[in-house]
Amino acid sequence: MRAPQPRHLSDRVAAPAVAVAPLPPVAGAAPVAGRARRSWIGVARPLSRRRHGTLTLLSFLIPLGLWAAVSYLPFLWHPLVEVTNPGDVAWMEPGMRVPRAAFAEEVAAAQGAGGAGPEGRAANPVYLPAPHEVAVALWTALTAPPPQRDAIWLPASLWHSIQIIFWGFTISSLVGVPLGVLCGAQASIARLTEPVIEFVRYLPAPAFGALMVAILGIYDGPKIAIIVIGTFFQQVLVIANTTRRVDPLLVEAALTMGSRNLRLIRRVIVPAVLPQIYRDQRILLGWAWTYLIVAELIGTSSGITFFITQQARYQHFDNVYAAILVIGLVGIATDIALALLGRRLFPYARAEA
Image (cartoon, rainbow, N blue to C red; front, top):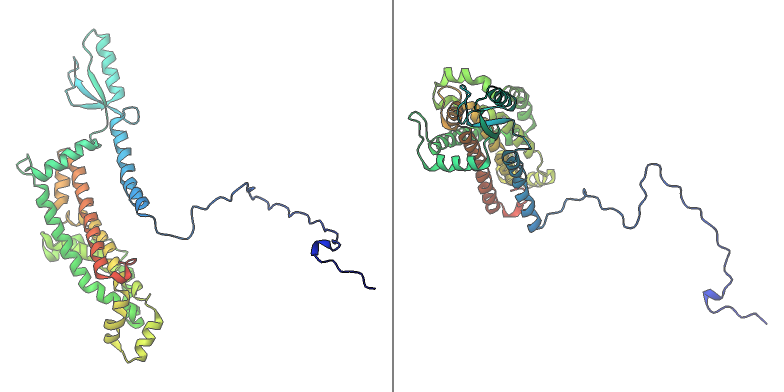
């Protein structure tokens, strides 16, 4: 008679267990205890709206806080002493800023001679005004006429600089964008033009200043030309590289359907890369602003550069900082406006626009 079979797996005779030795630890690897540590670098994911706004606000508050700390906390960095009462020291006067060592020597000398020593308070150099001083100077420069007779008004100088940027970047774009698209779409045109453009783009734009003055005069012509030279050659190469990123399958499909030459560029290639070209133009516009200061020093001084140099001559560095902040505010406001416009123009490609 056959012996009954076990009904369950647990009723069977268990095989002897084989002991498995643990793997040796990898040399240099830190032991992991509990939960594995999360990496702070990984697949890029969009931030939440709250975190995005918080980090944006901190990006401005952190440098502003450092500036305020250096300005208002004497123990951090106040290398000078602002004289409030010169005492018996003949060469000192109220408002003068002198090094701490020189001030201490005059105090000791006056006390040794039995006279009245100078009095003062810790201060930073005159070229580093406090944030509230710059804020007051900015409001005054925007709302009140300048106190000096030969000085220019900040809004008028800013408007003149904006016109220089507008015309220079417009002329550069009217030629640079079509040429960049052609270079990116046709290899022969790229090989014919890009080598010399690569060469010229390394030449500093201000080096052409004297030549532009000889050709265009001493007024706004050479300033606009410097903006054109500074942005055109970079523009062609950037736009060409963007155009080359168009999907080849898209071009082949258009060729199969009969599109050729300029029709292919106008109907297929340009619409495919237009959002990215728009974004490139926003970046290149920032480059135009970087050439503005040098451009406005060529020929007759004008625009916001003339305002900055004039205020620095009078040692009104609070006005200098105010003018620099105005340039930044105008630039970021323009970029935000263009970004919002890009979302309207290219709702299908918000990541690029």
